Image (cartoon, rainbow, N blue to C red; front, top):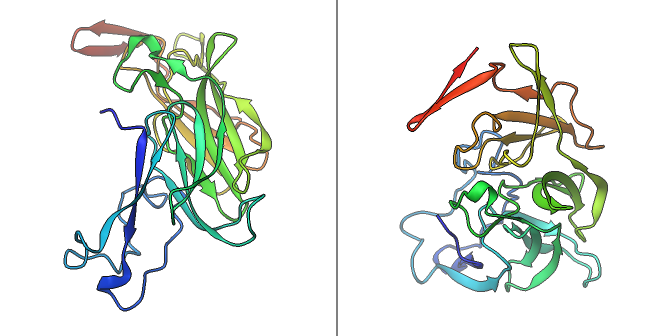
Length: 265
C-alpha cells in the first residue's frame, strides 16, 4: 500500500479530561520489544473522549517521499542550535533515505538529513513506491541519545544496506556507518553470502541488551535462490557485527514453481 509524502501529526486535546496526558517515549516499533502493538501504558484515550473535538490533525508536514516505517517519538529532546529546552520530537524516516526531526507542537521540521540515494524499484518489485530507502522502523536508545537505522542506497551503482547510529540532537553520525555483510555455510558445504541486491530490510529494528537486531527478507519473493531470510545483529556501541550471523536455513537449493519455492537439501 502506498503512503502519502504528507504526514499528519495528531493531537489529543485536554478539553475532555481535567489534565493533559503526558506523552510517552515511543522508541521502537509497536511501543516495546514485544512488538505486539499494545500500548499497555495508555490510560487516557477512550471511545468516549476521542472524537472530532478532542482528537485531530495539528499539522501536515510535506516530506520528500512516502513513509513506510513507523514514526518514533521522544517527548524530552534537546536540539542543537535551537533555543535550549526540551522539544516533543517526532522522528520520521522516508523511502528517500531521509530522517526528519519534527516538532510535534506545530509541525515544524527541526532537523533533516539524507543518508544516501535510494534504490529505484528493486528487482522491478513495485509493492512499495518508485524507490526503496528506509523500509524498516528505526530504533531509539534514549539513554545513549542515539537513533539506529538501516538504509538502502545506491553506492557506486550497487544496492547496499548500511547501518547508521545518529545523534538525536543533530542527526550527525555518532559512530561511522557500517555496510551490512554476512555469510553462512550451506548443507553442501558451500558458502552463501549476503547480497543486498536481493535482500530487503523491512522488519522494525530491535535493541536488546546492547545488540541491534535487523531482519532481512526478499523483494516480492523474487530470486528465491538469492534472497533468503537473515537475522543479523551488531553491538550498539561500536556497530561491530555479531560473530554469528544467522541464516534461517542451510539448504543448498530451491525448486521454484508458480505458487512458491520448495527447499531441497
